[in-house]
Amino acid sequence: MSIIGFIGLGNMGVPMAANLATAGHTVLGFDPAPDAHASAAARGIRVVETLHSAVEGADAVMTMLPSGAIVCAVWDAIIASAQRGTLLIDSSTIDVDSARTIHTRAKAVGLLSLDAPVSGGTEGAGAGTLTFMVGGDAQSFAAGEPLLARMGSRIVHCGAPGNGQAAKICNNMILGVTMIAVSEAFNLADRVGLSRQSLFDVASASSGQCYALTTHCPVPGPVPTASSNHGYRPGFASELMLKDLSLSQDVAAASGTTTQLGSLACDIFDRFVAQGGRGRDYAAVVEFLRA
Ligand code: NAD
Image 1 (cartoon, helix red, strand yellow):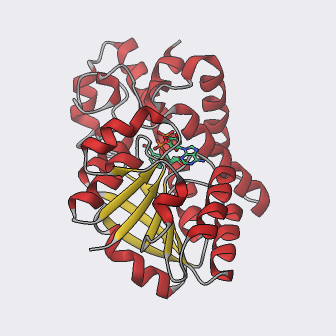
Image 2 (cartoon, rainbow, N blue to C red):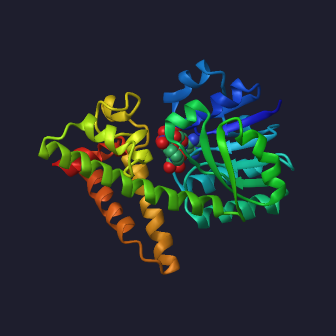
Image 3 (spheres, rainbow, N blue to C red):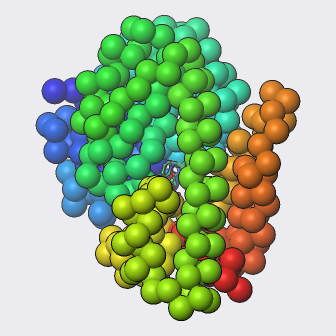
């Protein structure tokens, strides 16, 4: 078993790092915010006081952070502390350019690197059933796959550095659009006197079936584990969904691609976040659309 540095002990980082600890790895966790320290320590993660302490001597270092700018800054610090041959894995959702930049910087000093963003949310992180979309060279992928398999049930090598982020951005554009579609369907059902449970029972076994309905159902009742039954506590915060949709629109503009529903979803989440959605799970967009 190996020593893993884990940087970013937030909603996703803690359960992911906990699964590595459960698998027998020594996990050294670092996060400047004290909020998650107690829950991380309770789940077998050794919380350390500095990033350097988490990285020095580690066989692999994972990052699970909010944005591309933060990941670039943190990777610069990691690269300064890591020993040659260490594998660096970023599982945050960030822009493709930042992902390619950090790969280049890591490779220049003899480190292996992967961009490995995830799908499956906090539910999948807790259950160890995340999907990892991975970009990086074959040597790095071979080194990282066994580790990722401790946190996920599906590991897809998408090709060259940055391609994991490209896959993630496309996937989350689908998620943002479908969460709005599912929310509008429930709001319509309410208006015409169709019960939420009836719509769920039909659509979850019909062609309307999708993750936004069956796992992250935006209305309380049908799916007990969904944030809608827990005051829309994230989960996956609305501002992170807005971030991902904005990334999709940046890539769309840069590649000359028209994504009409992606653009509309980005606009809706932009207004939702500005009008009270910040800090709430993205499924709460159902209330914004109802209003
Ligand atoms: P979060 O805000 O709960 O956690 C991020 C953590 O990073 C925080 O604890 C913060 O203190 C820490 N952090 C910020 N700056 C830091 C720094 N310089 N050094 C060390 N730690 C630092 O976010 P999250 O929900 O865990 O998401 C993390 C990433 O995963 C994001 O990129 C998000 O888009 C992606 N993601 C989230 C979900 C989800 O359902 N929450 C699903 C898939 C992907």
